[in-house]
Length: 276
Image (cartoon, rainbow, N blue to C red; front, side, top):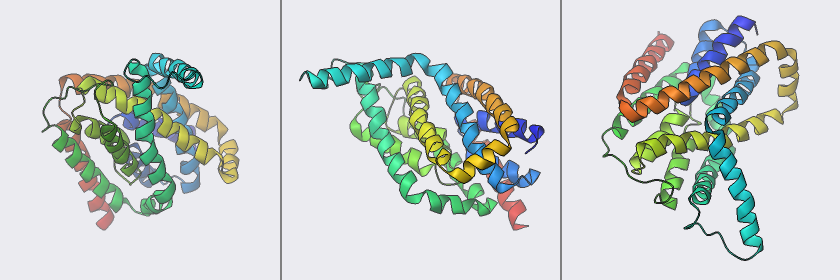
């Protein structure tokens, strides 16, 4: 893994992780065109996720800190018999919604991860996934403006968003796009929908990182590419912050249909070159 490849992959990961265009799909496409060794890409992708995790922490550190403090207070309330008190604690209710949304994602990841990973052997499933992502984004813009926030969204809303995030394990399906579409479809306020989607990415990325890092073979590949991995991680973190800020502006003021057109073009393109 060269430093140039590391910078390119870091930039692709950072930008596409938080824009609704599928980071895994784009990384696979880059791997195909640059003929990058598969094993290196697997561990490198994991470490790039560490970079995008830093992006989330940088952008939402206040929310994450409040959630952590609220967790400690929740434990105290449960120990003293005061109960969850969700109606009185909006940030606590947000934390519960994030936990509920993470459960179906975790279950899908554990049960079907190997099946979905096997689909990366060719670009055709990735192209199909990108086209599906475009359709989801296009459909979400047909929904009326939402009004729900952490105090009014339901448990079923959280489950729907979590299920859609879990389906993003499929090649070409955007995680951020899926969770955002789920939020908008559940009539979440647009600002809250993007905030919830990015906060939900924290446990998802962290869980993926912990799971992959437990593999000894992965660690040996990591140590052999430590320099490029660190460079790629830094690039992913910096570009990830840019992507989050861009996504927030677009969701507030523009339409997601521009991303639909983009992923449709990329999806059709990769299917055509694969078939030919």
